[in-house]
Structures are given as C-alpha cells and as structure tokens.
Image 1 (cartoon, rainbow, N blue to C red):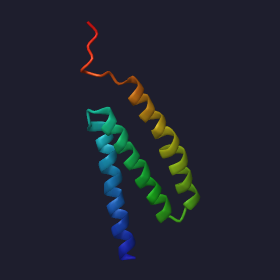
Image 2: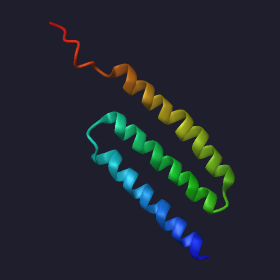
Image 3: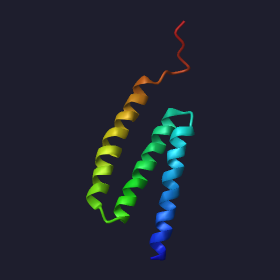
Image 4: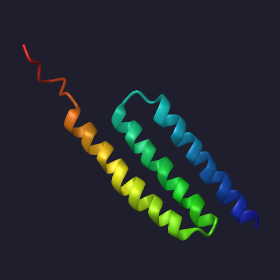
Length: 86
C-alpha cells in the first residue's frame, strides 16, 4: 500500500510538472515533448487504477495520434532562422 502511494505521488508530480512545462516553456518543440510526458503519466495513472484498456487507448490515441500530429505540424511550419528571405 505504501509503494502504491509513493508511485501515485511520483507520477502526480510528473503529470503536474509536465503540464506546467507545456504552458510555461517558450519553445514549442519542448512543449510538445512535455505534453507527451504528461499524457504518458496519465496513462500510468490509468494502469494504477486497473483500467488497462483506457491506458492503452490513451497511449494509442493521444500519444500515438495527436502528439505525432502536433510534432509533424511543428516540424513542417517551423521557420529556419539561418535562411533569410531578403
């Protein structure tokens, strides 16, 4: 029981820290990576609640789908600072 409480507290801190990082970090690439960390830690919370199907759907849909879509959008719309259009 003590180990479950420690694991919950650890992943709760990871979730809150990554969520704050998504909002406060200026670089959009790092923000997307922190969003992935927050989504994965929420999946760990689902596993701790013995909801393995929800954890699998969290990983497949959000981390596998939405986060990859955000990553591609960031990579395709990023402007290279070395190339100047003058």
